[in-house]
Image (cartoon, rainbow, N blue to C red; front, side, top):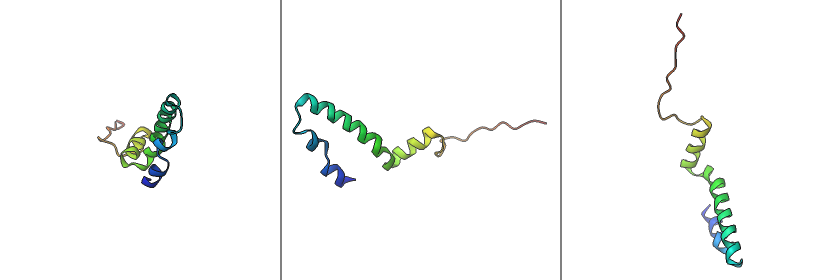
Length: 68
């Protein structure tokens, strides 16, 4: 991952672009990289599992029992 960040760094990609275009491309690439790399980060994995309801729950669920 670190190798890819060095080779395909956002600064190296947007350097030859005009400033206004470089800003837009940079913000779009930062957003895209954040979305893609979140699943490789332990905290990102935990957040994704939590949002899907498949992660470790922070507190125990209360289950109602059926009364006869």
